[in-house]
Figure 1 (cartoon, helix red, strand yellow):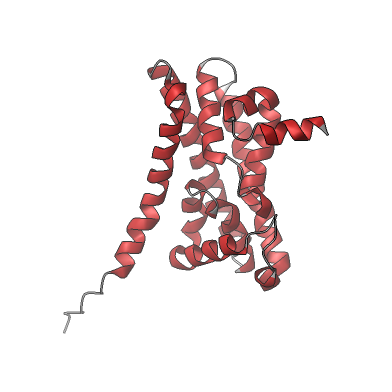
Figure 2: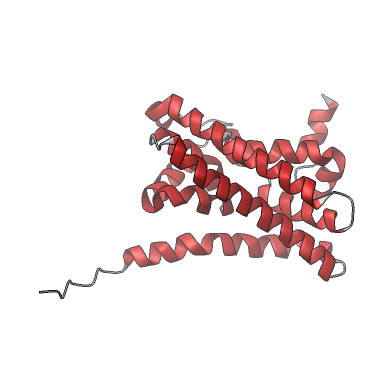
Length: 212
């Protein structure tokens, strides 16, 4: 019980959480946030950047982190996909509760409808949406052979880029941990840029066909 209380008390202190739980807590959080519908509140981006930062100090091994967390991200999305496939449309009729946020699921569904299969990759870089995107893909009966390719590339890209950013900043800038919140804010802004640009393009009127 004390371990569970310590976990939740450390959620707001990402560095303390990693130091407390090490590789185990990193693996659990990345797995849960990637595909378990109650994991949307977990600190995925900030966790990975901070883990990369700690790896730059020698506290963790960057290659072990990349291998382990990529596997957990891919496995988490696969679990989310099969959960959506099994529950089907019934999940959308579930009322909102403490562990279930229907509005987040609907947001992911809308994003999925706009961007199709590439949503699985784009959503990796969008907090909340990345948790529900694989569930929506399962509900929509996307073929798993197609889903897994997007899943693998998205998982590798997300883990590699966020870990790499933290590792690079830790190596290049002294005392960067004092500005980690600004780094995370920058990551979030960058993550919403592609879908925002795509949305703007979808709002533009189509050019008339001038062909005879």
